[in-house]
Image (spheres, rainbow, N blue to C red):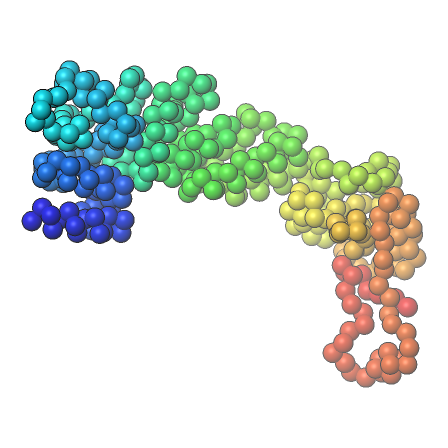
Length: 379
């Protein structure tokens, strides 16, 4: 019976899904470890004990002991801490078998104390938070111990958040707590972030905000995150801050210092949009990423749009109030000034020649008046 059980569990260890399968309390690497111990113990009952008698906290304590090397690398120290002696008689079981027999007689606290030189604060409480489904890798338990035992100020801040979180401690949550920028590291924020990937994206957004937004101090970021409370969303949070960008990176051209040309940044885009009665404020993302740059030439009452290309910054649009038509003379004046300021300007024109003249007299699908960011072409 036991051999059949072992074979079944060994075959399905990786596929078992906690909460859905019969052997939900044990999965993956921990299940494989206990199967190996069962075989070493010669049907010593460790597997049955783990299923029937060992609760979630006991299983997590065992997982921690195994993760810290007490089974494969230093069972002697574990056994000495646990019982004060090691059976070294001629007929003594192997050290692995003694380990398996010992943990069946020990409470979770005793297992943890035998596994570690120093017991980090709140470790047992954290193991309780892991609950019925063990962490998916031994390394996760080692990282948990390192975090809880660290004296580093940053790690202590992360430990406090871990202690305050009331939700079940999963691999994802642990990684999020280890990763999130300290400025917004709160119990509420970490439980609203799905995984480490999202945490890294949030951190990247905050780095950009600190660089581009003059008011993005740690205190203001924290207050903003707290204000969102349970509605916190990493993407929305970053976008809301980048929409306040007021110190965009320069283009590296003379236009950066031109007194008669004003750069539009996201912080002022809405004001300029109202003045010009257009939707320039909806291009804040392009402004922040550096894909496009918007400038006002007040003397000409136009907004010019520049696009970054592999040939440099290029003029791609000229707009006036209400996106109305821009006179040719105004466009050419804007073009000439931008060329002086280092911008590449290539303007669309209508084609010449008999074919173009012939076709222009008929209804057609081809439109020679191709769009130039709201400005029509001219002869």
